[in-house]
Length: 180
Length: 276
Image 1 (cartoon, each protein chain N blue to C red):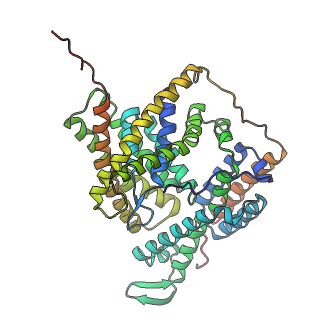
Image 2: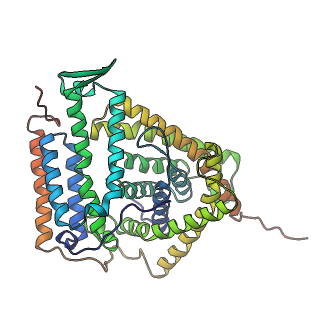
Image 3: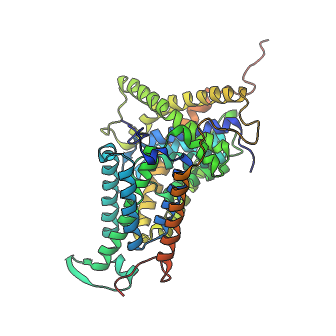
């Protein structure tokens, strides 16, 4: 594995702190253990900016801290959170948001996040739940569906707006023009 | 608002005196066993051992009442939904059917279903005391060195301690920004529609992320200037040597893994089935 740069180490630490804080202000939804959670929007943005390894560790550390300070770690969902960061980070590696953003890049980001959430909550989390907790498939499917949909909407709306806002503040290459 | 439900509580107790490494190993072993086993006998024994350790740690129920409340709600909802979706799941798992009574329609109450609920509840409950003690009795500054000790790269370990270090800062900043935005008329309280609420949350998140990215620059420059990441290894200010009690605790963890796994898989399945 490539060595983590100092900047990634710090980005993981502060990203996980953000993930934790936002996870604690989640808006509840009607299905248990699933929330309308802003932390996934932030995880997606950080994974896009700092890459897949940062994405994985932000999800893993942040979610473990949330669970450990509330009711003990629920490992299947922690791993799913890390998985979301991995997929989004990998899919957006060549996106170069720092060099400005257009609608094509936004679509790319959104496709990546939709795929990531569907796989994580529709496949990874339920399969691990069956392996570890042997819960009934019907219940896991309902939970996974609810979590995917709410996280896709949250990441789609909030994540996209955050990326747009971020891109506006970055000074683009060649933005200075020589005066005649 | 975002209040951390639990953090480090400093007391004098044998559990506090154990090194972070010991507690981490114990916690990991414990949660692995509780994840794998579905054997009621093993789970009940673990619960009893957990209760004893809790007693020894001098952490009181009052210290963790908020967390226990959350865990109770979580368990209640989880059980309720399992029952609503699959009222006869226990019959499937334990391959026999003893109907006690019927509530309405397909919602029967079977002994197997109740037993399944008991087991899944025990599985969560027996992790709770150990997980809480791990958080409440481990000095956060010692945690990174413990991760490094069990073989996690020190960079990842350092990321964890940075996260613990910056949680209060991020929390304070979140509160400041959110209050400033509320003063300007942005509402998150739930009176608005969901989509409006999501858009409103951007008004808080964007400044929070921008300042976090700034903070990342500042902190990573500071660390780079001090030569972080130059060597393959590093030393830790908070690292302690393992003493006799540490080795005893690790031996206990190993014993729990060995006995727990043996009893669980003795009859070739994860489940203890009293019905057959």
